[in-house]
Length: 287
Image (cartoon, rainbow, N blue to C red; front, side, top):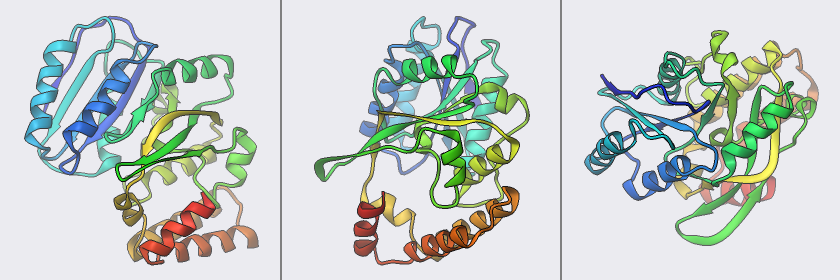
């Protein structure tokens, strides 16, 4: 494993992003640029989760040279030979961020095929500074695909109580939009690695059980790439069973096993088994 770091120069926000073999250079460039060009200075930490495309590797090598000592947005890249999955990759990045001398106050998420609006970090930092009860902050998103010019605008509830009340019904956050207070991870919290296919949901449940505050900004601060491949990854028996067990665990941890929540858990299990075409229609109605 090799990691390229940088000197101690300033920013209090670190963004973490994992890249793997199926990611494509044009999409990765858009994602990276959208972070490094933020109106609020932040640093980007990227890990290669196993082998990646050679052109992406070359691109990252160039960024290391250009951005290591930049006063704008700096770039840190870690290579790992073995693919271990998103949860382990993000945990490794979190450890890298916490071990950096900068002392980041906030840690944000980004996916390698999405795009952050250039005021995303500024708006999230402003909200977190004003609302000390919020520990995890998401945003709205605009969903898009390469095959369609149509954008769907998606928002989630803003209030902590509603997000936790409905956590069995739906995820409280759009995962790549979130920003955490670093103190969460300094307390020892990490993405669970024993909940395959539902790592982010399991993290939200763990944070809710520990009493951390949730919130969302309604503004559409990321563009979320939603191709058919995304829908297919959300389908199948393995995904359905993993999510169902995660929701049963959530009901136990949060003491919320009600008829309503059991109904939602079974309903979502059934949705994951629908044919892709039917699932697409159901998603458009329910999202």
